[in-house]
Image (cartoon, rainbow over all chains, first blue to last red):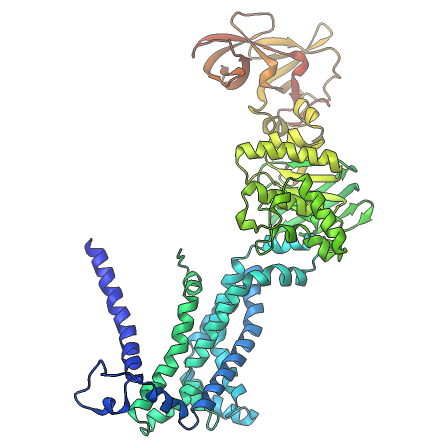
Length: 269
Length: 363
């Protein structure tokens, strides 16, 4: 093994450990009995595993409702962001038009703008529009956050589908729209699904906007962060909550990892 | 079946002119080949007929119907793409009947036509497969089948054979010719391969820089190229060109080149123009030059550069003055590099051209 390879492998190992170790610790703690969490010195590997920690969390006040809220917000976000990003991505992929570069740059620029600066004006505006403490309001902010990613993903999906296929459909009597619906859309579906799932993860994990913009209608991360921040939450509640937050993202990313890699320009066989 | 008229087509992309004032009449049932080097506008012309390009100017009539403003689907055309453009997410059968479904033809009719086309292209046993499970040649057959089930007035093909390997290409070329004989639909076929053009076309329209240089039967385009470009584009090896001078001698015309005077065939009409001083460009195909090992009347002295055996004959590269000529010689003709040979140019086959414009001096 060359030195270069050795360096590469150790770097990968460090990065993987940095990401995976906390997840592992949280997962272990989430299945550890409550008493064991408070003993000192604490064992890393518990004597026995239990579901009671998770169940305690799930039965806590507001948790189930906030899970439901999170799902609703995520679904709304997916719908809104695809509605906006899919046509944008298609246009960027298919047409060379004046201002195309500007559109692409502005998509990036949105990402560069710190959301923290926006939070107070946004809260004020949302109160004025009656969107404060509503799921729709949170979904709108999540949509704004996800549009850059989703547009980039969708554009790369459509770039991968030759325009000639649509042209062929048009010579066979399909209108522009029908050619898209019958030929391009079915071929783009897996990629669009990946984009949707990615949006779901993004919305599911988003804390900041959800915390600022809701009071009673908390999403799950907002609920947990609130409990943790006010220091009222017991340890086992925190670990179970962390596990709850991490799991969907982990499972989903695992399922769509092949798409993500190709989207990032890496081809894996 | 329908005839096609192209009137003064013009298409520009920014500052680049893809086609300029192109007019062409394509007859009913004809197999017309658009031939030319890459970037000559042949594909743009085809796509304009298909309705996939919007023209800056000009009108397109198919069967005396002005289709210029119509979308591709309403022009009565079907097209075979260079990449085949077979829909990867549909089975072969669904690919073939796609257009019929768009037309909302009854299922019974769809099945009947698909079976007929599949039969004609020998892909009947592939109907349940997905394109990914097909070879390039089979995919191409699917693309052709998908086009012909439409019973189009006009069949358009954009370099359909260019993605096939050499052997398969030869085979499909013959298949396409047979198909056209059976269907007799007006066909416009784009290629940059002159052999394809010569073997398939009823007529060839040779294009250069967005313009049609010559439209004629393959034989006429080969024998009587309208310009120097046509002579040098068609034929492998292409036509030879020599500088010469045209003189009147004993009531007949004699062309002098490389120190030899070649009397021209009497029957030909006198040249329309000869550049004042009588200088002309003399074009002749390699097979119309005879290589001799001894001087003869009217023969041109030359030096052998290289002799290449190419199977049925030998290809001889010789130097005349400063110019290199290609000559086909019988397979038993032998000559070493540097050896002196004499060339006899068939007077009836000499094509005189204007040295400045490159245009042929007689029709």
